[in-house]
Structures are given as structure tokens and as C-alpha cells.
Length: 399
Image (tube, rainbow, N blue to C red; front, side):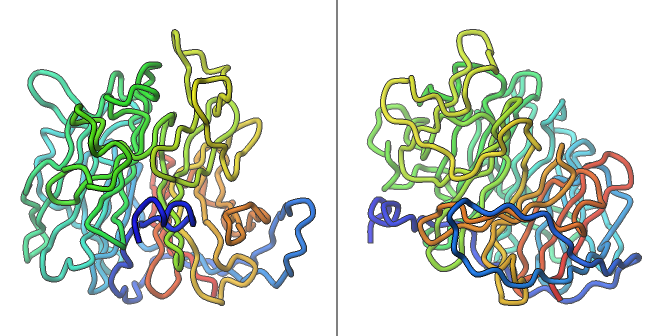
């Protein structure tokens, strides 16, 4: 089946299932009743079932703005900290710094050492990917790099930069979320517009886009919507018209890929990605944030969000789909972390990705700003906090 036909059926590819993750002893533990605030879509006749009694455990504390977390097998995790440009291995509640080219990482504003992706064959390859600001040629950009972790897990060697030249200015709206495709060798990259009004709609700019590239070479995938374009950067573009992509997640089963995006003062968005889609962010001339997140007055056809926050925004960030019947009311939902909202929301969609309802467990309102969500093979979620002081990686279980 071609990518376009899969997209028509809302069946795009996304991150590979990561390896088994063994239980981690934790310094703190909370077993919190999952009282919820739930808003149903008008007219929904979906049967309501009980919400799970969530258990939230601290896997590791003492972090500073951890941006992402991924399991690498054997009970170990990789964690990035944005402002410290620090990569760590965490095991049994203990953090150990991994040596890498930290001096080249550019940290400013919202940009630093950000998203992670881990090779599903990590045990054989030791490969993982990062997205970060980078100092180069007297300036800086945002770039995606593939690394190899040493057998001792004490050092990471740069294999190559997969994509360079993602624009940045002050560090504002730096994106940047990574997602490995389960159906091919593709890597999805969600980028920010760098607060430059020209970037989202300029198909030769890598800002304000979701890119789709070969995970090792950085070349455009042959079935990308602009794969035949004369401009090499345009060939990488999968979707455009984005403001600041913070999350990417693949739905198990049909493989639908969604992005999660920061709004301005209104309308954080969840968007269903299809090849060549325009999501309608156009703040130019100047940087006029009063314009709609999806402006249907632009040339061509714009694609509406499948969920939006309304006013005010809650600063949605990372997301992952829940799996397993233990999640009860939150089963097969998109779990979305929020920064400004200081909570996690669970959004349920039907098979056609139409919103059914939204729930907010009380258990996930107690940890302040939440940044990333990672689904584990047993159905648990890993969640990072982003409060700037004594941040944590949390493990959320429905059992």
C-alpha cells in the first residue's frame, strides 16, 4: 500500500514499539484515585466505563527541565535535559551523565537538548537520535543527529547529523519532536517556526513543518509529497503551516500519526497528518499572533485540527497513545502532557479520528508542568516534569 493510500485511510506510520522495560525501584510512590473531569463530544453514544486508579511513581528526581525520556532495555532509560544540554542514563533511581559533544549544543530560550528516539534494534546497533540547537560556522541552527552509545553507556559518539539547517533565531519556537516510523525507515521531525513569520508557509524552509526523512541518511523518503521538488529542503517536507510542533505520536493498530502543537493565546492543536497538508498558520507580515491557528483565508486548502484547546491555551506538549484494557475509560486515548495547564489530558477519538471525549485525572494535576509522554511495552507511561527545579521522570500505571 502506498503512503498516500494509507494516509487517505488515516493510516500513516509512526514510532516503533520500544523494547521491554523492567520495573524500576522508586524513591517516592503515590497511589492516587483517578477522579476526573470529563467532557464528552455532543452526540457521542460511546459507552462509559470506569476510570483506572492511577499509580504515579517517581523514577528519578533532581533533574532540570528534562525534555524527553526513552527506555533502552534492561531497566535503563535515556533522559535529555534541555538547558543543561545533558544526556543521562537512569537505572534504579540513579542518574549517570553520558559524555557527548555538549559544548556544541546551543542553548537559548526554548531550545537546547530536546527530543529523543531510540532504535528498536538498539541492543544490536546502540543507535539513538537527538534533536538540539547546535553551534556551527559562527552561528547556530537546530539539527537532528544519530549517535552510538558505548557498551558501558558512559559515552555517546556522534555518527552523523541527519538533518541540519532547521532555522532558529532567539531560541523561541525551537520545536522539536522526533518519531521513528514503524512501517518504514522514516524519521518524522516536528519543528517550530522560530518565531519567523515566513517559515511556516515557505516550503523551502524547514521551520514550522513536519519533516519525513530516512532515519540514517537524512534523505527525503521517496513517497514524500514533494519528493520530486528541485529544492532539496522542500523534498523533506511532509506537512506545513505549523506554529511549534511539540508532540508526535502513532496510534497502534492503524498507524495514524498525529502532531501536538502550541497555540498562540488560543487553540493548542492536535492534528492528523496527511501528505502535503497545510495546517494554516500564517502570522505574517510581522509576527501577528492574533491570526487564527488555522486560517482558511489563505490560498489552497487548509486542514482543521482534530482537537483544539480553545481560549486560553494550556501549552500542550508531548503525547503518546495508551494501550491495554487496564486503562479503562482512558483506553486507546491520546495522553497529552501540558505545560501551562499543569496536567495531563486523555483525548479519545473514534476510528476516523473524530474527537469523542476529553478527561483529566486528578492524579495528573499534582506535578506541575508536564513535558513528554512515552508509552512502554506493558502499557505504562513515562512522563517528564518541566518546573525547572527538582524535576522528575514519573511512571504512570493504570494498575
